Length: 408
Length: 141
Image: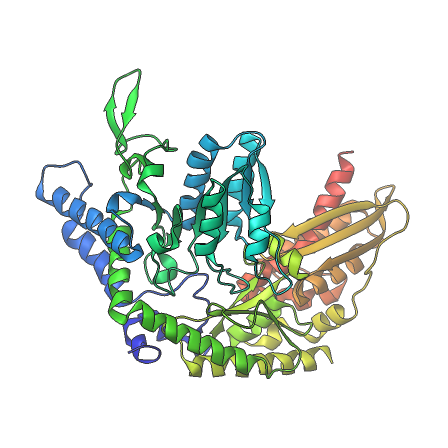
């Protein structure tokens, strides 16, 4: 039911853009959602909404069940030990910011180190810059090998006994590199550091097992995996979450309050001040159900196959430049087409109904490393098929012809 | 939506053969501006004397629209007083909101098609924002 067949569940994909059937190749920026998710949100607002963890009334209980049920579902989806290890956030960015603002600032001091990589999205870079600045810690990067991967030998050298936090992306949103986070976790733990994994690009495409990875924190966003925008989660080991101070204060997160002082609830509620995104959690739970009904293994297999096909086809185009490793890559292809600026490529493709991303992909240090001010990116998901790839290739050839004439 | 409305021949000509591309060896007002959402970058240099833009040059990286717009902007403001140049920049803003002002340097009108591609307006305005920043910063010195 994957590929073309699964599209029946995605109303947004059934439209023409600029007179051509839409080919959506920008799922790495944000995926589309199936009717099951849209319906879950609608059902929640039409039948079950009230505030959570407060009212004695029936709707309050239903809303609480839906919200906490979603937390249980996320915990199972990631294979966490318990739902108490799942904090709902606005997405990956706010999840990583929470770890940086709470955990890192409490454990780091002058002379300590925070280790990242040059391929991090700005959301897994700037929070650590800020934490290092606030604590006097040093921010270090594991160097990139020429093919854009990181080697365990380099990780071993960069992570030292002074390292308190290692933060790496599971899958690069530009290079498509899949990082060996399980091995990096072992190195980090041996040196007494924790490992924070940015799972924004991996969670939609592969089975995640946080206990097998043995990472200490893991962040992801709902909207990249067919869920709603504005909801994501942070997984954190219970023993670490229990030691962490909240960074947002207010209702919902307190235990006992006097005019002078307050105490906090236990994790995860300690980190969820204010009325949460209940509808978002309902939608995220529906997205997990949807993905699991297809099967995460099946999605991974499909995404790999379509990316391999796309890679083989796009290489046929003279003058194309592909960034990142040729093997073991996630379902995205970052490229440049001769001297044609990626904005111009994206505009011509859009006129053909093909949606791709162009720009620096929130990875300015990586762009500098690649020696490109901007790149174009096509990314694939469970609703894409080889016909989409063929339309993309045809549009790229047209782009070349158009700019050949326009510049000729 | 027709691509030819965006990529007019005049625009491609400025992209392929930019006017006033380069830098000055001696003193000039220099302003760097980038477009954080896409990575386009311009470095604009202005030779200002007695309130007149005697010369202008630019370097940068960006798409055809941003670089063509930079080329046209430098051609349009060379020899103009600062006030005249700012007035042309205002007219350009008006052009980007769908109005039809007149330009002495008529090539600029080719950029009117950009308004049909809202995602690209910021590409076209980058160089003009650099111009405004440059003359205003100079005036405040």
